[in-house]
Length: 337
Length: 226
Image (cartoon, rainbow over all chains, first blue to last red; front, side, top):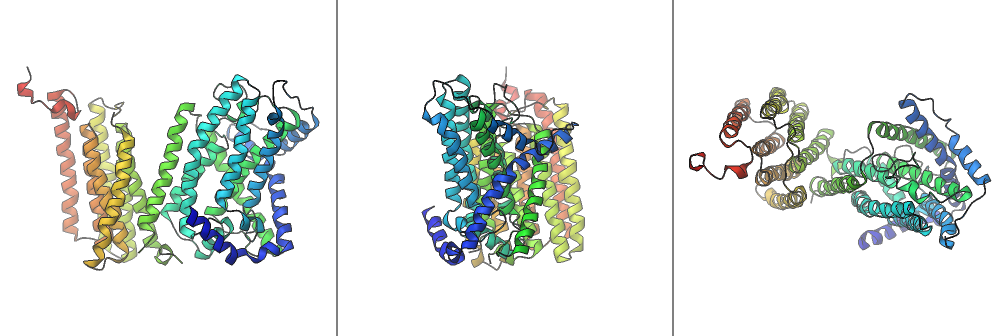
C-alpha cells in the first residue's frame, strides 16, 4: 500500500502537476462538485420513478426529492434533550465529508487539481469519516433503534470496506496508480481491453455499493417502520434541516458510487482536456451512464427481496471473494513475466 | 501498454472464459445444494464449449466446431440432465451438503497460486506463448476438482467434481494444442458419457445397498453388517 501511495505521488507530478496552479482547472473542480450536489437528488428521483414504473405505479415526479429537501429545510429542527453536541454537528460533518469525497472523483473531466491531491484511498477515508459520525449520531440519542442501526452499519461497513479496497487495488495494480484521474486516463489510452479481473472487480464493487448505500438486498431505503432497517434507524431522531442534510448526503453517496463505477469501468466520453465541447460531451456521457445504471439498480431492487440482516455477512463475503478472484486472475492471467 | 492489450480479441476472450471457468470451479467447491452444484457444472461445460468455438473461429479449425457442439450437448445438457434425473429419482432434490465451504475456498485459492508457480518454468521446455497462463488456470481447475472430491461427502457431489477435472483437462487441450484430432476428441467425449452412465448405475446400486449416498456411511461392507 505504501508503494502504491508512493507511485501515485510520482504520477501526481508527471500527469497533472501543472493543473495545481491552473485557476480554470480549480474552477472546473468546484463547479463539478456543485454539479454533484445539484444532480444527486435527481438521480434518487429517477431511481424512484423507475421502481414505480416497474411496480406498475405512476410514482412521484422525478423532482420530488428536491421538494422534500426544500420542505425539510423550511421546517424547525427538533433536537432531543438527551443528546450531546455530536448529534447537532454530525449532519454537517457527514455532508461535508461526503462533499469532499465527491470532489475527488472525476465526474466530467480528469484533469482536476482535487483528483491530483487525493487518491482513492483518501476517498475511502472520507467516506469512513462520514460513516463514523453517522454511527455516533445514531448512538447519541440513546434510543434502541438508533443503537441497533449503528451497530448494524458498523458490521456491514467493516466487511464492505475490505471488499471495496480489494476491488480498487485490482484497478490500481492494472494501471499502476491509485490516483483516480491518472487511472482513468491510462485506461482510456489502453482502449477497449477485456479484462477478467475488471469483470470480477465490477461485480464486487457493485455489490459493495449496494450495501454501502443501503439499498435492497441489504437495507430498504423506503421504510421507517421495520425492525431490520439500518440507515433509517440511525436517522430516526433527526428532523428539519439536519434530516435534509443527512438525506442529501445519502443521495450524494449513491451518486458517488454510481459515478465511480461508471467512470472506472466505462471511462469513454470523459473529458481529458478542458475545452467546452469536450466537457459538454462528457456531461452528456455521464448523464447517460448514470441513467442506465439507475435503471439497472431499480430493476435489481424490484427483482430481489431484502435479505435477513444476518445473511449480509455472506453477501459481503461473496463480494470480497469475487474481488479476491479478480486479484488472482489479474496476477495469473494478465501479467506476463 | 500492458500484456493483455497486446493480445488479439480472441485471446482476450479466452482469458475471460478461463477466469469464468475458474469461478465456476470455485462455485462447485462451495455450493451446498446438490441442485445448484449440477447447474454450475452445466455452466462450466457451456463455458468450455464456448472456448472451443472461439479457438475454432480464430484459428479456422473447422472440425473444432463439431467438437464444441459435442462438448455442449454432452457436458452442458446431457450429463446435467442425467444428474438431475438421478437426484430427482433418489429424492435428493432438497439435499444440503454439510462440508465446510470456507476452508475449501482458502485451500483452493492457495492451489491456484501453487499451480501458477508450477507452470511458470514451462517455457524452459518449449514455447507455449500466450497459453502459459491458461495452462496455470486449467491446472488449478484440475486440482480444485480433486479437492472437491476430497472435501465432499456425497457421492453425486464427488462425481461432479470428478467431471470438472475432465473439463479442466479439455480446456487445457483445446487452448494449447488448437484442437486435437477428431478421433481423440470423440473418444474423450464418449469416455465421459459412458462414465456418467456408469456412475448413474452405481448411484442406484449404492443407494439400494447402503440406503444413503454419503460416503461416510460406506465404510462398512454390507455383508458384514448385522
